Image (tube, rainbow, N blue to C red; front, side, top):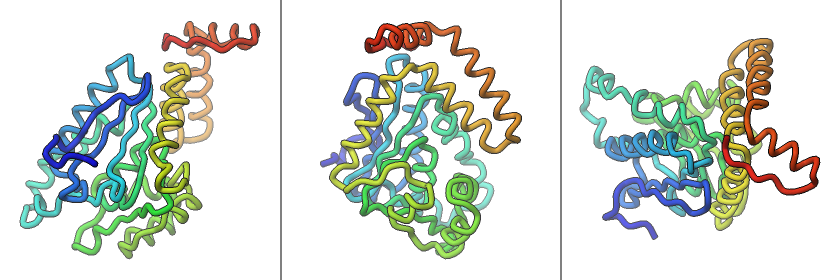
Length: 261
């Protein structure tokens, strides 16, 4: 059970190389208050620079991941005030985190919660999870990447349906559409997410970072541009000690000992 009196984001290190960030506003269904967003941003900034961290797990509670933005902080606020919040700067450390990020989603991932989950590289969802962009129902629209990342994840017509109707989709629908990478029973979400995080944290860190960078940089560009990035990144990894160790371990038929160099 999460402590309502604790900070709105909790950090722990459940496994070697794995950092876990838990959203902790149970009294407000983990609504993304300005304080929570700022704290999440600062944690990602620090974790990106921590050489001991090789994978980041982002999660919420057992019943809700995050139910969206904090409406009470937006009602009655003018356009210039909203613009001056510069949420793109607050979310930039999450968007540009060089390390693999896994979102573990139970329950609702609505509005900003859905947008936050989409910033992760993998999404492990419980069968009872729901994903939704309901902003149109209160006279606005997704404003932290929902119109752009959603269409890249599930395609135009599904993104249009979600954004124009404000209706949720089930975890099963999200998995079929390609929004979710792993679909498991609700009580297995944390176990599966930690299993994946441990697996990735045990891989060569430089290779993991290059894979993430090239996939994200190349997905919206021409194929030839992406292939050029891939060739250069792959060649760069041949300068790493982990590449030498990995190949030698394969030849020696032993387990590799990766050091992140």
